[in-house]
Amino acid sequence: MNRIIIIFLVIFTSCSDKKEIKKSILISPPTIEFDKERIPKITLKEYYFYGKDSSELNLQKITEFYSENEIASESHLLTSSNTEKGRKVFYDYKDSLLVQKRTVNKKKDSTKVIYFYNNENQLIKRKHFTFKQRVRPEIIEKQMESTDWIISESDYEENRSWDKISEIDFSYDSIGRKTEYYAPNLHWDSQNKYKWFYDKKGNIEIKQSWNNEKLIWTENYSYENNELSFTRIWNDKDYQKDLKFIVYKNANGEKIKELTLKNGNIQNKRTFEYYNNGMLKKKIVYGENNEPLITYIYKK
Image 1 (cartoon, helix red, strand yellow):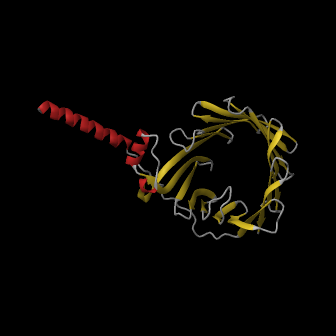
Image 2 (cartoon, rainbow, N blue to C red):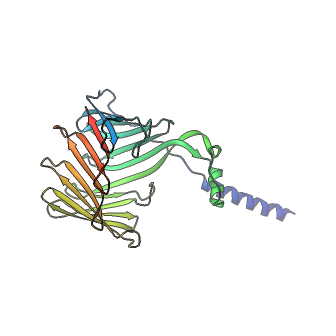
């Protein structure tokens, strides 16, 4: 009888330890000091319309700037292909360096990105955090045991909590050029490493994307006059053979046109116009037949 009790206790303890190991440890973001007294000086309103009918302008986003190069905040007002309704983004600076980026949406979910620099003001680390309701641990366990389990609202914890979703390290060469982006332990997708290689003139010659030690794609860059082009070759030949991207710039180095080609055919086209101070004035996205799909207007 005593032997049976001992076996039961061993099994129970083993199961308890197993559950304890599975239990996640949530991580909260650190408190970051930043300049809270700065006042935005520039406001830029983003409107959009579909096709060629500019009579129906929709106010989509309001961006405030501390200066032409420093964003203070973004308010997303509408839902479209690249925005989330009710989302607000705040940029925090200290000694002109971006040290924190905060977002909050209509549901009160939030994110934080913390930026870390070395003595030469080079970005060496980014930590990403989310604040939201999370699936209860016991539901995660049930979902792992059954592929038919469908998550419902009742499966979430009552209160929101912070947790870290990525920590990215950046490396540079001896003359300060970025050579690697790597999140070895935690990241939001499988492409957790990027590498940059440069030619003798200092231009990017090759860029690669990796999943740890597995190569995903390679981009080969070329430069001619004000035209930058690169071809992306996927390591998985069965997935996609190659895409070519071309970027055209004006005399000020501003991007004025982007093309994405597949097998020589245009897949995407975008054009850009700027104010005299370099801030974006207009962006047009075209379809395959060179017809404008959506136009963005930026008004000060």
